[in-house]
Image (cartoon, rainbow, N blue to C red):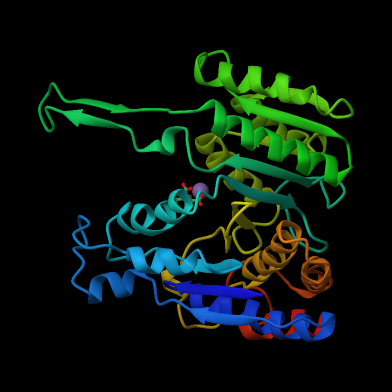
Length: 362
Ligand code: IPM
Ligand code: MN
């Protein structure tokens, strides 16, 4: 397995190092070889190369680097985000650019409460909090279409276009039905949208959902408006099995999901192109204030590594990689009960100690 590693900014490199520590052990255990190549992509590099902190004047990632990233089996990303760079520059210049150019059209985000992890939901435990969100990752409000006119005047007009395509919606929905079939749990796929207001775009989602759903007779076709879905996440998370939703709503509900599964210290996700190269990341940010202190929680990054192994193994039909991914998840589940908290600095252990514990559990 050839893996491109982007440590990125802030605590990104520290948590990625713990994931790689676990990779070394699990690869030996299961018996496969791997190769790593580090890419020094970050806000620091952008600034050092003369990047303007307030508006993008040079590329955050070069075309040749994107071309090279395409040749790997998977990409392992720590975090991108720099306190001295204005919001949007690194996000658009790197993260969103990679998602679009590598056509990573799915953002897969499990919401699973691991044993011993505190959830803010009263009377809910690992039995009740275990579902997965399939977020469309290349369209919707993230399309970048729109613009402003008469900027800075009282007549300013701003449009931000929600652009969905039949092809994009269909492939996300089909992927979600497959995820739900494979999970083989409640056999319920919930489409989350806002069909009562976004009648055009989410009308397309709804029609496509029912149409593709005919190919999956054993799966219940369920629908929630996004606002109601937020209520049920808090009140009845056990209702959910697999959720499919658009890019913007997926962004929002997965932060809520991350909180009920124990916070940004544990939540991981994958930007997926099943036919090409996918990118896996802890979904919390670069946490600049904890950089270099050995206090940040590496569990999310280690879980992202587990997802990387399992999903890449699925896409490339490599049973050893899948087994390695499953082992990493089990090792994480054996470690979380020993931790005092999932919050940075309150775990009862350092970043590197948690990495050692997961590696030992593997
Ligand atoms: C995420 C992040 C990104 C998004 C930002 C950093 C552009 O919030 O991965 O959820 O909105 O998709
Ligand atoms: Mn987000």
